[in-house]
Amino acid sequence: MIDVSLQLSVSDTRRRFDLDVAFATNAPFVALYGPSGAGKSLTLQAMAGLLPVRTGHVKLNGRALLDTADGINLATEARGVGYLFQHYALFPHLSVRDNIAFGLTSWRRRLKAEDAARVDELIESFGLTAMARSKPATLSGGQQQRVALARALACNPQVLLLDEPFAALHSALKRELRAELQRVLAQRGIPAVMVSHDADDVLALADEVVLVEGGQVSQRLRADDADLRARLL
Ligand SMILES: Nc1ncnc2c1ncn2[C@@H]1O[C@H](COP(=O)(O)OP(=O)(O)OP(=O)(O)O)[C@@H](O)[C@H]1O
Image (cartoon, rainbow, N blue to C red; front, side, top):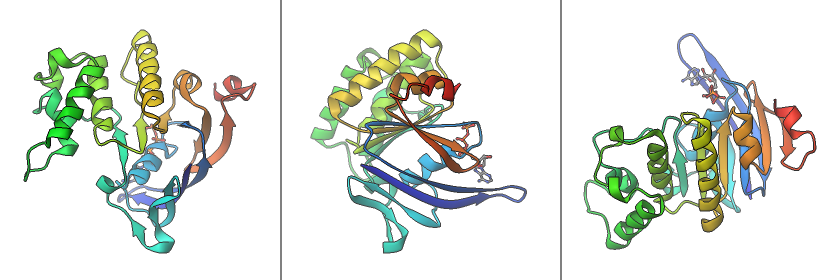
């Protein structure tokens, strides 16, 4: 069960955006869908603990990652979330292997043997063995996306947060990588929350769709709603 309620504001000198979203679901794959600037990425960032929240909660199978009423606000690294950033945000100076291992290392210690084995398993299962020592810039778009996904999974997350995971890819590759993502999530039993404004991504992957507009949830739709396609397009 993913249970989210978030109230926050972001602003700079000229703009202010108020987010007030809430949804609770048992769906294994949830899509946050809506127009550009609706507040989808801010929702994901707040769930991951990357953004200060004024009031609200984020609960995962009953475990509070954030609950402002109880003074709970776990640090990002303690939340057990894997995050795939829009445009992947790979570290250009690190190899594929070091990108994937990044969250498991620190300046104080080297990778533990069990973590190294996990990184190697991810490299192999995502077909990245031949390029494990290469820098991200030398990889194709699909390969970079696989590195980002492997990095998000390296910390053994309880939930995967995906921000526009297929936006940079052409349509044949999108189809291939959607299927790969479904396989990986089913294999590992990890629920996912995906931000997308691509109706095809949503139709292909989501069990439940949360429509976000103007910083609020405007509708909830299930994948088996007969008119889902019509309502998304
Ligand atoms: N620090 C900030 N200061 C002011 N406004 C901000 C700040 N960060 C985000 N915003 C605004 O908040 C709104 C919601 O942003 P968000 O990134 O969540 O949109 P989105 O729904 O993910 O859109 P897209 O699909 O285009 O990525 C946007 O209008 C954005 O410009």
